[in-house]
Every structure is written in structure tokens, then in C-alpha cells.
Length: 93
Image (cartoon, rainbow, N blue to C red; front, side, top):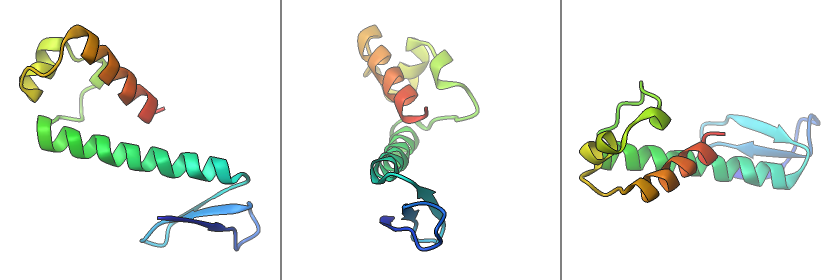
């Protein structure tokens, strides 16, 4: 994935994926934020898949501490779970 000057005149910048898909942005900072969000989502998905055998059909904000610890092996406290849920919310906004 890379950020390049827009070639189609729709915006100033394009985020181009390895598959040839692109999205346009007027500001480079918006394009950078978009790329950062995509990579954060990919990292979150990798974490959830690898460590939690996660079922994405459920809303992660509604999971209880016990459900998180059952999936991830007792790694969360109430405080760290709140932080983790805030990270998910930030990534998926």
C-alpha cells in the first residue's frame, strides 16, 4: 500500500493497494490516517485470530471480562479490558 499523487484528478492524493484498488484524498494527512487505520485493523484482526480464536459475529464491546479471558487466557483485568476496548473502538471508528 502506498500514497501517491492523484492521477485521476478527483483528489490530491491516492492510497493505492497491491491489488490496484485506490481511494482519493484531498489532504496527504487524511491519506496517511487512512493507511494507519487499515494497518491497525489488520493488526487487530491478526491478534484476534491468532490469540483469541475470535468470533467476529458478536459485538466486541458487549463481551464480558470472563468472555475475553476465556478467549485470551486470563490476560485481562477490568482496567486493561477497558483499554483494549477503547483501542478497538478507536481502530474501528
